[in-house]
Amino acid sequence: EPEVTQTPSHQVTQMGQEVILRCVPISNHLYFYWYRQILGQKVEFLVSFYNNEISEKSEIFDDQFSVERPDGSNFTLKIRSTKLEDSAMYFCASSEEGTGGGNEQFFGPGTRLTVL
Amino acid sequence: AQSVTQLGSHVSVSEGALVLLRCNYSSSVPPYLFWYVQYPNQGLQLLLKYTSAATLVKGINGFEAEFKKSETSFHLTKPSAHMSDAAEYFCAVSTTSYDKVIFGPGTSLSVIP
Image (cartoon, rainbow over the protein chains, first blue to last red):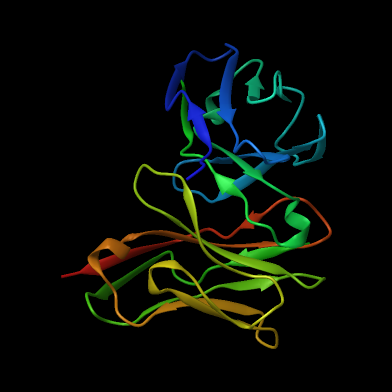
C-alpha cells in the first residue's frame, strides 16, 4: 500500500542551525502539507503546497520556514535558524485532491526534531 | 473560525466495554470531519470521515461516529474495546474554505485488562 515516508526519523540540532526535513509523498498525490506537534500538544497546521507554490500557511510558518519540491518525488521543509521552541514532531501529509472536498490526507510517520 | 474540542484528555475503559470519545466542532460553513488515531511512535492514521453523506459513519477497526448538526458533535464510539485500541485519538475538521485540517487536542485512550 502506498505510504508517505519521512527522513530522518529523529534530528538533533543546535540552536541557530539550519535543518531540512524530507518527505516523499504518495506518488500520484498533488497536494502536500506540513504539520507539527509539540510534545503533549495538538497537531498544528503549518503549510499547504500545490502546483509548486504555497496555497496556505499558518502564523507559525514565518520567514524562518520554507518548503520546496525540488524534484518529482521529494517535499522538504527547511528551518533556517532553529529555535528551542521549534522542537516538535513534524508530520508531512499528502492528498490526491485538496482537502476542500473532504478528501483524506495521508500522514507520514513524522520526524522528531530536537533543538538543543 | 473553525475549531475542535475534545472532552476528556484521557479516557480509560475496561477491555470489552463501550468506547465513547467526544468531539465538538465549530464551523461557519458545512464541515468535513475526521477521526485520526496515533499509536505510540507512529504517524496519524485515518479512522473515518464524514463528508455530508450518511450521518453515521463506519470506519476501520470497528469504530463509528455520528454527525449531529444540532449538537455540532461527531463523537467516536466502539461497542467493545480491545487492548490494541490504546492510542491517542484526534478529531479534526476541514471545510471547502481552506485547504488544511484543524485538529482537536486529542484524547488518550487506555484499555484496562
